[in-house]
Length: 216
Image (cartoon, rainbow, N blue to C red; front, side):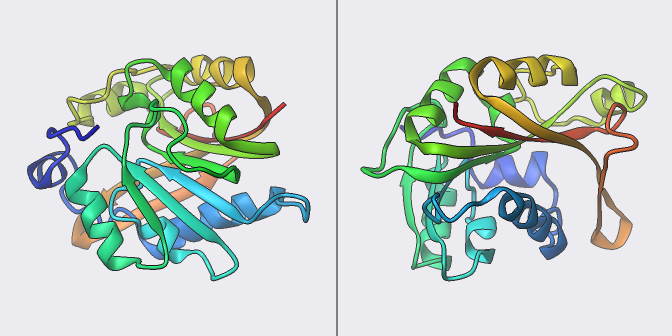
């Protein structure tokens, strides 16, 4: 079901330059994180929840079968035009399986914090994953040294869950086997340079984290 809130105006207001905030090095980091955990037994088939314009899926090489969903019919239409080898549908992250296949990987980059019930998202992901498949998730966090600043800078009214990192880690561990998590320092600087620095040393104080979790 489409959600009219996530239209062109939403992206222009909440994310003043969405393309600049998703530079190739950021997408490569996501890909490298996934590839570290892939095994020959897992299908190279991926579903990106909240895929927006499909930029991440389009960055993957031809070995991957790519599928994307988003509640924004506006962005799904753009994704389908830009990445014709993919399969895209309008659907919410908590809608349950919408494709008649299973996936080696399901991703959700800055998505779950928008969904009313994250537990429903986790159950849906588990239904979609092949045995031993991986869920890779990025969420903003609002604790640590960066917490007060992130709360101040957060302009997105659709962020429903402004959780500390421990709450996200506990959530992931309740539904999956949590394999790793890393902090991410990120911000769009002047001249449209997007700072994106993964860090383990400072992961308790970064404004975002990436979780890698495996289906039990």
